[in-house]
Image (tube, rainbow, N blue to C red):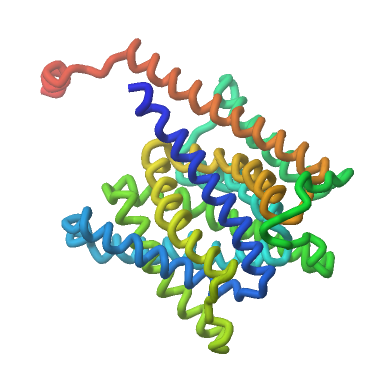
Length: 348
């Protein structure tokens, strides 16, 4: 029983490890000159090739029973959370760095919590310890992101002199480009925050995470192809060789699209959108470690301080959620629901 209760936590951690790999390999692919829009189409297409046969085999009856309205909602969600957000995020990482791209994910608890409040999926009881922990965690999260953005401090050189992919944050040529990239990353987080909440609403209707993930991936592949072919028609840019571009596409198409997005949908269905969003600080930690091993990027003091603040915000919000759930369980035990027979008699 306890193992089942810990499964969402393990799934959320695996998601963030996969997303950290996405940030690192995407940055390496963009540094090699790969077009952002073509990269997104290829990764969505690879994900579709893996997901579609599995979904048809296991969820054939559910697919046949999908209404036109649900299909339209899935298509529109794909345009928001996949096509729009991932294109914008890819450009943001290209103009900044893999580390900052991972740090931007930590705005997700703020944006998701904001939209969850609007849709009345979350509530905050300020006078209770759980409410103060949730609000405090969000504030600490904002402080951590601010430290990452505005304070760098002393630069700690990489511990290893050999790196698999040679990329440098100094590739960013202009401060204006860096600021524009930061704006794009923030916009992507706003889109993802709304996407998390809308995804939770669709999952409440009975749709399975596998069907939802496959539908959004297929829709996004079609949408991304239209965008990519409109932006880049040079056939040489579409070619993939045995290099980092192919590795990035295969990794993102399998581990991120197929596994991480499915696990993300499953966690949202089990624990809600805010729970999934508050695990994003782990993405930055894994990306910082990966930058040491794979990229020629060091770590600044500001990055270390910001990372610790983000982890603190993670545990604060999770503690608030757990405290809230335990209080709800105690209230249910102290005030059990009225038995059906008694309820019927009172109604008569």
